[in-house]
Image 1: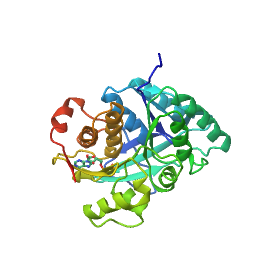
Image 2 (image 1 turned 60 degrees about the vertical axis):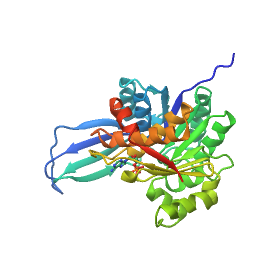
Image 3 (image 1 turned 135 degrees about the vertical axis):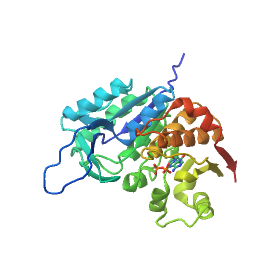
Image 4 (image 1 turned 135 degrees about the horizontal axis):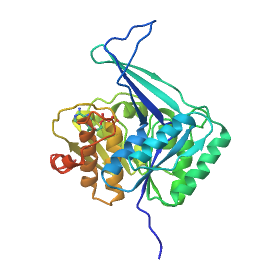
Length: 317
Ligand code: ADP
């Protein structure tokens, strides 16, 4: 008997420890003291993995991490029951600091992360290729570490295609362009409005304009699924040659950070469960919405899933 895996692998190439410093007032050029500090494992792919895990779908995490910061990330993933299959490197992973101050202002200090070598890129590709035999779908989220080439995602998509593993790519800039320009394509991309404008090279006028672009521009016609998330306005998706308009209810937003990642998690789970196109799209909008209703990034309350799922509507245009 051939063993068919149904596990999802969520990739984060440049994870971080996200440090939050809440202070009443930030004073420049002097000492600021802070208590109440939170430190959590961060990175878009880790948000994706957490939400997939909350939907009870088998999931593992990978990418590269190292040093004591890497150990902290690894420990936190294991604590929430996530399988950790990162390539461990000798350099330190990064910290990303958000200072929350002065009535809602947020000042961020983001480390670039370790500078990696061509040999480490080869080691990662070997590591990733080995993991592919255990999974049915891969999500790739976020930016690349320094030193890895812009075509890394294209290489990963090619390796996945060889083993019939589906890929969802959620990135931006050069790594997104390179990721959809290879001979093998990801099954799905989930650009937001900003990323779609980057890809097309101009801001889109309205939904009709967006629809025309999705149906006619070669970069999109070559892809099976393009799900453009539109924040509070839901999404517009192209699947094959069909366009779907996804409408969502008005909700109380607590923290929208990580909604795109939670949407990717919903897409991955729906596709991995072989759901119909409307169900996949509704699942993704529901996970996106539920994330905005929580304080914590990349986190949903699964007990609200059915209620909000039933409020999403999908119309084929
Ligand atoms: P990203 O976080 O990648 O920029 P979006 O802002 O498009 O992505 O959000 C992804 C999804 O999360 C949306 O399609 C929607 O389902 C949900 N969402 C985000 N912001 C809101 C909002 N203000 N109200 C309701 N749902 C939202």
